[in-house]
Amino acid sequence: MERIFSGVQPTGSLHLGNYLGAIRNWVRLQDDYECLFCVVDLHAVTVWQDPDVLKANTRHVAAAMLAAGIDPKKNIIFNQSQVPGHAELAWIFNCVARLGWLNRMTQFKEKAGKNKENASVGLYAYPNLMAADILLYKGTHVPVGEDQKQHLELARDIAQKFNNDFGVEYFPIVEPLIFGAATRVMSLRDGTSKMSKSDPSELSRISMTDDADAIAKKIRKAKTDPAALPASPKEFDDRPEAANLMGLYAALSDCEVEDVCKQFGGSEFSTFKQALADLAVEKLGPVQDEMRRLMADPAHVDGVLADGVARARAIAEPVLAEVHDIVGFLRPQGK
Ligand code: TYM
Image 1 (cartoon, rainbow, N blue to C red):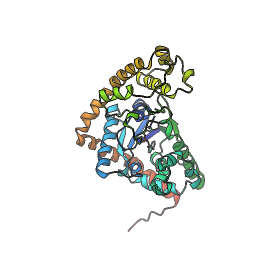
Image 2 (spheres, rainbow, N blue to C red; image 1 turned 135 degrees about the horizontal axis):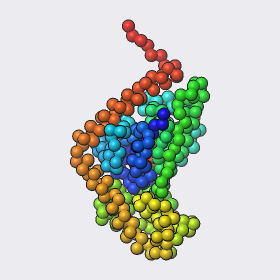
Image 3 (cartoon, helix red, strand yellow; image 1 turned 180 degrees about the vertical axis):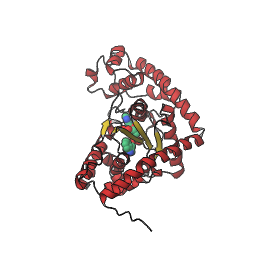
């Protein structure tokens, strides 16, 4: 059976990369797969989070999923910490994964920065928890942005090693689903670095909570180069900002980058930026309105999460019981 698992961290407000690279694709997959979409709060605490802000952000991410069009009846929307199996399976995977594998993870190096000694142990073991997230439900397909590719390769290695070590064909080898025109949305201030929640510059990203004026201002101020817009993606070499902005236009208007190049090739950036800002406001506006409506009704969002938690636990518990048997954990039967 094919089952999708994917997740978003409740750290800061979601940005256009999260929406176009992940959540919007999930909406499109929900008719073809059984899906679990998770607010990964255990991952969030690998770096310090203010407890009240974490709770608010958890609701914010759940509201974004609903506002984007994920149907909570058909799919399971829940927060990770409330299904204890994630942490439990992650421990077993801590004992399956090798130090050498984790040492190769580029995201740890980026996030830990220069002061590696001071990073939490959780940040280091983060990819093992991510493998546990997916495999706790025997997930087969994982729709993510480009930046998660290496973590998913690790999840494949963990599943393979677990199966080999115990001589079983138990865990599936997960398939990444990385598709669409926005698998890697770049910063508006620097076309060579990823749009990210941790960038200190607010101008680098469009947040899902930005109003129309803020969106237009950020696009107007986006870094560009002095030449006219390229007429073909072949001219994107050495023009990362043009590539990023034209890729965003393609993703938002659901067309190919080639078509955007045909339409705007030779134009000035100022004309194009105005068109991009109008398009972004038109496409994001309805999602943002719905998010605001949902954020004003936290009881509804909590109800969706509680229902998701119960349904996720029901899938996870038998898997964990089988894993206990495979690993050799005695489950003593009392009198
Ligand atoms: P997170 O919270 O950083 O990002 C959530 C999703 O958004 C995608 N994304 C982007 N896509 C395109 N361009 C960008 N600039 C951009 N920035 C982020 C991410 O690829 C991701 O799909 N480790 C994960 C969360 C996670 C997870 C999982 C994902 C935990 N367990 C299991 C899949 C399966 C993360 O930090 O995502």
